[in-house]
Length: 189
Image (tube, rainbow, N blue to C red):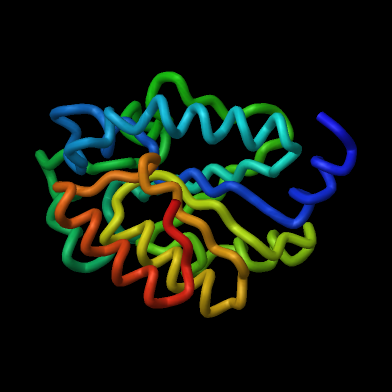
């Protein structure tokens, strides 16, 4: 790749959001229908980013096994005998097969929908001169949408969502949420 091509991507980062076993694999406690279908597209997006020198940021949920750091409405999932989704160190919290964090790539742990909420993502992006974002992962109406809204609020431009590399419970929900996000200055490709 020519140096001029690499230069045009120097202020862009790819966010890969919640591509973890508990969200992607059937039977997972947070299963997102269609999540398995997007894995090959997310892999291609990661490979394209790496080939262009775009930093890949792996955004994952990892929770305390007792649920002390989850939203109140989810605390019941962490009571005795319950599945305890994406508990730190569990198989469910691991990235789905085919996605691997390479040396030098950044893993960001979050405990809420937005990758920006109560994390150091904005600081990390600023310190690396990142001004535009490409977003992939699950789940469109929750984590993708909230991250897009917060990115726009922090004045990242452009914020681009790769539609075929995201999933929601149904295609209708995914499409509806994109129209909503599009009205907030994000690009859907």
